[in-house]
Length: 191
Image 1 (spheres, rainbow, N blue to C red):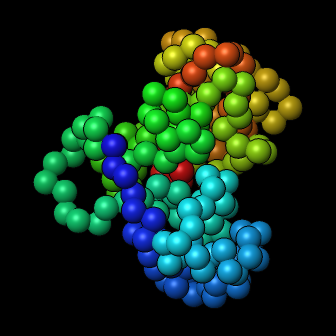
Image 2 (image 1 turned 45 degrees about the vertical axis):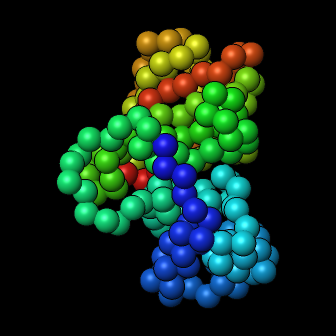
């Protein structure tokens, strides 16, 4: 797995913010963090939480994984497990991941994005229902999972799959005392 240096991450966030013609103060207000914290993140002196990254991506109108993308030319489209781009929230030992997202697609340039999400026991994927501009198809690959879809809760067991229409508010919950995982595809890439 790629271990993203905090300075590289901060520089990416700064570059995108500047490209979008936002000041630190403007983005900080939108993301609901202090300008001081955002400045520290951009300088590689602080690590943003997963929720902060998600909010930054939303307000900068970029996929979250674009903060982690290597812009060097790729010689191949293969993504080896050890080379996946991973975003982790919680414990950092890959065997103890509380919440983690792995980008399974080789980059953000295609028409579809494939990711794996792991959740620790009884954990939600986010604090609130989220929606995005892409259609999402997910399959449960480990244990079982709940999809909170607007006002409904849908249970998926290992091997079950579901499509979530574009713009539909949703989030995931692990209803078990074991780690669970799903693989999901989003088109167009928005995660």
